[in-house]
Length: 252
Image (tube, rainbow, N blue to C red):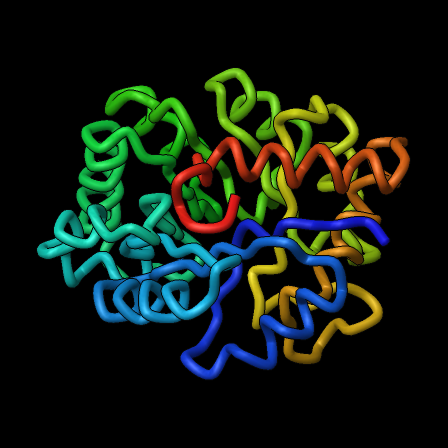
């Protein structure tokens, strides 16, 4: 069985059974992601209960109107391995765009100041996202989570030193641009995720997602890249461990 690392999921407080199913399915690590201050605190609690789960602390663009006060205090927690998810979402505009830009810039600054990875969410805001990163300074470790761009956006991200993380969307029939993007990515610049409980891959599309399904994502990435599944599993797992600097953060 190939072993996988789900580098972006959203685990609830009652994650025990979900984590157990992931382990049984060959998942050797998971990062559960914070979307606001309370959610980040909850992610830390969940991660602290499992040796193979880590957490991020961040403010999602949907929550940007609430600001980032208190976020920096969470970054010293032992299980916190990244800032985010942070970014711009001009599809829903749940927070004003000026607030989104301000909060995103603040989190880029926190990632740089604390030498932590930055986890980016961007939707219908590619140009603005790249421009803000250029202005603020791209953190040394940056990932575009749930990458949804095509080859052009992939090249822009890769040119800035970022990694691309692919979700279950890559299994969807209409995702040809996404598969084309994966096909041009160097193997050491790719990670895989479920973004669970959202975006379940085929054949589970439309149902609740969970980290146990990350192997289906990885298989689709491998097919798009024209590489053996085991090779992609090994590489993406190793990349995740290096990206999140997991040595010294519990199980490594």
